[in-house]
Amino acid sequence: MNTVLTAGADAFGARESLAASGHPMIRLGSQGESVGECQSKLNRVDARLMRDAGSGLDNCPLRVDAIFGPRTRAAVVSFQKFAFPFQPAEWDGVVGPHTWAALDVHAATKPKGQIAPSALTPSRWGPLLAAAASSGVALRDGNAVRTLIDGRETFEEMVSDIRLAQGDGDYIYLLGWDISDDFNMIPGDAATTVRALLSAASARNVQIRVILWAKPPGANFLTVRFVNTLPNGAAIRDDLTANNHPMSEIDLVKEMVTGGVDGAAAAVLAAIAARDPVALTGAHHQKVLVIKRGETLLAYCGGLDINRNRLEPVSPSTGDPQHDVHCRIVGPAAWDLLQTFIMRWRHHPDGAKLDAGAKGPLRGVGERLPAPIPTPPAVADKDAPFGGVTSVMIGRTFNPVRSFPGAPPVLKERDIQKLVLAGIRNAQRFLYIEDQYLIDLDVADTINRVLPQIAHVTILIPGNAITEPTFMTEYRRDFMERALRGLSQADAAKLRVFQLSRSQTVPTFGPHCYVHAKTWVIDDELAIIGSANCNRRGYQHDSEVDAFMFGTTAGRGAVNSLAQAYRIRLWREHLGLPATALVDGVKNADNWLKGIRPATARVIEFDHRLPATKWQAVRDKAAEALRKFIDPVP
Image (tube, rainbow, N blue to C red; front, side, top):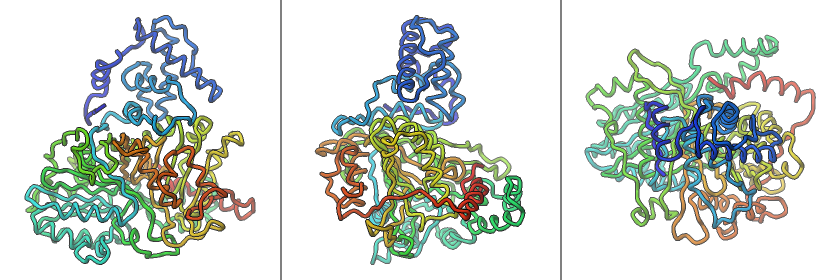
């Protein structure tokens, strides 16, 4: 499948063209075989919802009479609200390609965690992702993907690719949240600092363009200034973020007073929040590196910052070097990450000024969409180490700020949240999550609904003692309580949360215990790697980018998908077991549990419960008063 809905296309026209290639579009007044098929599938969805949730679709079960009347339309709208909960534009009662795709999936028999690894079907995620995404987001087939775990592996790949950019048409584009430009990305090699690598590339006539967040109070300033001194370099320090205005702190105090917090306490809480200026404004949190070298376009995205704390124990008491993940993509989806950089460049007024300067405009603007990589062995094992080509969808969170007169239009984007929730809702076997925060209540509610029908949800987070910001303990408790609400004891036991630890008896946070990753593996079929944490900030407020990836492997023994191979690598790192003991994401998940996990494991259970004390009640009130600012929506 290669579903591509281009940005700016008329949404209705796109639906019509897709409908023509599959099911016909049907609506009120339609008659015929397709209407009967739709009615039958609505009835099957209704029966499953009644069984699993106790409530079904409006006006179901329907009489299968092949006539699209008012009752059928009401049932369709009810289904669309279930299948697309955050997309009211889809609740139109018209059965087009998105609704047909969702019907096909939700009406199918849904096994409960009994799928054997050899029977994985990653391709089922094509229509599911396409149905959940907005019309400007493309599903790109034919990519070579390499999943990267931790700093050493990631930086070695980045250095190699940067050095291969050689010619007049080549370029290196970097989007960053925070950067250290003076450490050796390959230990012992002084030529692998960011400054050394970019200086050498610029001398080869490679175009260097960099956008870094204007992280308060002055982070990234020196790097931006350095890049602008390069003969072929230009850089922007980007402070155009949601809620970034001088009144932010005053607004915070007003909000808390309105919420019932007295003036003195409000002032104290404002001071707490002001320690982290992000809590009052917002951040550009995307971490993207795009490289054009010869005929090859490739890109990186994920959670890793180019920072020495991914390699060295800068602050070992807080878990450095941090555990993190990234991915490297060769193929059409790299072009979507290139467009992410171009959009950010055009969004800032300095982009136009720099384009008009002596160093010239972005070379990447005219880049053609790469052709899909056909099948192995057409790709190098280095590029696709799991032996197969991969389908990738790039989702973003972005809040445009009209920064100057005549600025090109930039769309508000919320696709990461839509796609993550669609992934949870359509899980058939299990969810595996690694996240820095784990506090989004929409995710908690969706996990709550899906837990009865899957085998387990296994989550890895950093311990409360080494996690910022303030009140993370309260927000994580709220997440867990929402995820467990109303479940039977058996279903509640399926939710398993762990933290990295140097000890299996008490939480001990030494080197490599801080989980900075933002990644999901669903059913060993879909892998998600990106910068968005599981919080409202990541899904609605800050600038983020995630890659949603699925594909089969070729000739790799018991491993049948990219997601499965990736999950096995993560579990090997945390549990210290060989790959052969971790092939089955359901049966082998018990290796995480106390009393079963091996002595080589570096994990311990996370307890979300907090004491019921007067002091805790005060903290609870303060946490709720600050929630909008610590975990905001714009």
